Amino acid sequence: MSLKYVIQILFTLLPLISAGPIAGRGTDEAVVLANCASSWGEWSSEMAYYSSGGKSPSGTPAATAVARSGSFQTWEGAPVSAKFGDGNVFTANIPRPVGSGMYAGTGQNSQSSFYCYQDAGSVKYPLSNGATCTSVYVCDHSPPGISVAISSNENYIELVGLGNVNPQDLFNEVWSRRGATSCDTTAVDLGQGCSITFTCDGGIPWTTTNGMSSTLHDIVGSQSAIANHWTTTSTVCTAWVGESTGPVCIQETQETIYHTSIAQTIQITVTDLSNNDVQGQLTYDLACSPPQADCTLLNDLIQGLNGAASVIAPELAPVFGVAQAAFTAEENGSC
Image 1 (cartoon, rainbow, N blue to C red):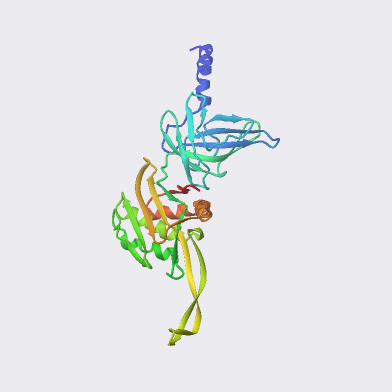
Image 2 (cartoon, rainbow, N blue to C red):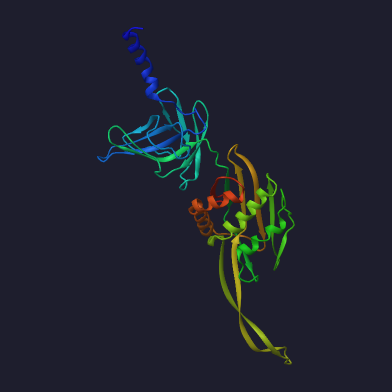
C-alpha cells in the first residue's frame, strides 16, 4: 500500500478517533456534566465521557461535547443535550437541584440510560486553552435505589388536655398497626375524643412497611415544625363549702393546660427509581377538633425536611435495604 493511501485512510479515520468511544460502551462508563472556567474569566459547560470509573471517573476524558459556550449551562429545570464527535447525543434530564451526592435525574444516549448524581467538583480536567472543567453531576449506570417523598397540606389539628404531646409518641403507634404489606386501619384512641389512624401498603414484605414507619417516627416526628406547643392557665376550685344558695369555692389553684397543634395528615410515598413504580405508601390521619390552616408551620416543615435531605437520604438507604435513597418533601395543599 502506498504512503498516499495510508495518509488518506488515516485522515478518514481521524474524526472517529478524536471523537473517542462515546457513552453506551460499558457498564463502568460515565458522563460528567461539567462547568469550565479560566483564570481570565472565560466560562463554558460541556459533557465529558469516561469509559471507566463509574461514579468516580478521573483523568482526561475519552471525549467531550460542548453544552454551552460563553457562560455556564443551567443543568436543572429542563433537558440539556450535547452532541459528541461521532454524532451520539447525550441528554441529561435533571428536574431540580439536589444535595451533594444525591440522585438528581436521568441521562440518555443512543445506546442506554444513565442515572445522574450531584457531584460538587470531585472530577476535574484541563482544557487545551488552560481552563479547568469541574464536575457538577456524574451520570453512570448505577441505579439509585428508591426515592422517599413526604407530602402534607396546611391543615393542623389542635390537641387539648392530652398533656405536652410529643409527635414521636403519637407516631410510635404505627408499629402496632403495620403488618408485612399493609396496616391495621383501626383507629388508635388518644383520649379526649381524639384518634390517629394509619393506612399503608408495601411492595416488599416488612422491608417497605418498616422503612416507612421508621421514616414517619424518626425523620418526620423529629421535625420541630411538625407541631406547635403552647400552654394556657385555668382557675380550678379545689375545695368547696355548702351554702344555702349553693356550694361556695373556698380554695382555688391555677391549672396549666397543654395545647399541641400538629399536622392532620402526612403521606409517605416510596418509589422504585429503577422503574418509577410506587413501592409503598403510608398515611396517618388525626381526628379531633376541626382542623385549622397553618401555612407557616407547613412551609417550615417542608423547608426543614428538604434542607436536611442530604443528611436524611443516606440514613434511609439501609432502612429500606437499598444502596442509595433520594429524599424530597412537598406541599400538596393550597398554601
